[in-house]
Image (tube, rainbow, N blue to C red; front, side):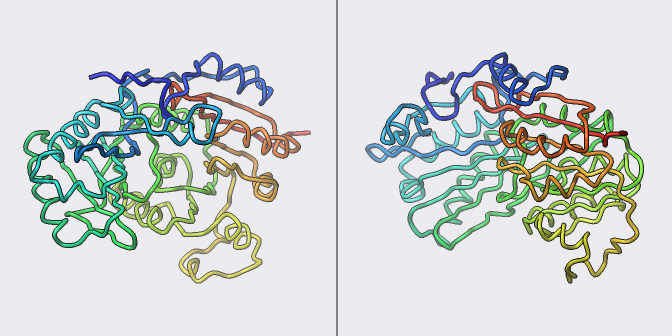
Length: 375
């Protein structure tokens, strides 16, 4: 099956890579950079889809996302499937929709309005079903029947989660394992339903390897916005010690479990916001969460940041300017531009790369490595 709606739903806005590269390099004033391209179909391992109900039958849908009027932008576009999804995820959703539309699952699909799906290289699928109505133990019984059918047909490990207002029901587990081979070594990650994961697995691997190839790798590393350890685990092979922080409690827990699984013991993962990290390192405030960490023992040579779309902001940008080497992964070239205005007062760009993690959209991932100016 193919998607007839490329360019008509909010998932694809059809910008070309050349257009994105020209725009990004111009506003960042960068002339020398590497380019990492993605497959144009079958590249997304994670998706969030709406559910369209009509005459007692459901189908997948996306917000139109285009048009001048607010009403037009909120309009839903019904889709059969999405060619951007990796094949196992696409097949799983098609099979899921087909089965759930049977009369036996009438109550199970009632009130369902959104689906979040994540597929990993461990042949594991995590399905989160979000409802307008209340769900209870009866839902778990129906979910078990659905899971048994899907596992038999698809031959994947499948975990199903149900969510409604104030309720989360878990069938077996809300965690799946991901396996990434980075420069010949396999790393195992713990992905939780509420945690952030990179949607394009192949481009994610290329980003990690690009960072590993270009970092200075001496002394200790401070990492902010570490998530579930996507970059942290491989970077542990390049630095003596790593102090990694993240505001999400579930992501920190996943990162700690992943480090234990991979037998990596030179990382301290701590739940701290960006401002709290600044306060801790500047010794403005003491935290019970840091009782087991001797911050004075670190000799930080580098800092790694992978912030949300809003970027770092002035306070954090000026804070990280104290480090000799800055590794910055950005998902928003506009906020990166603003942060670089501050960072380039003390540092100069040593390496830059663009990663087309989101083909058919206006988004472009960027990696920048800066080194402190010598004069």
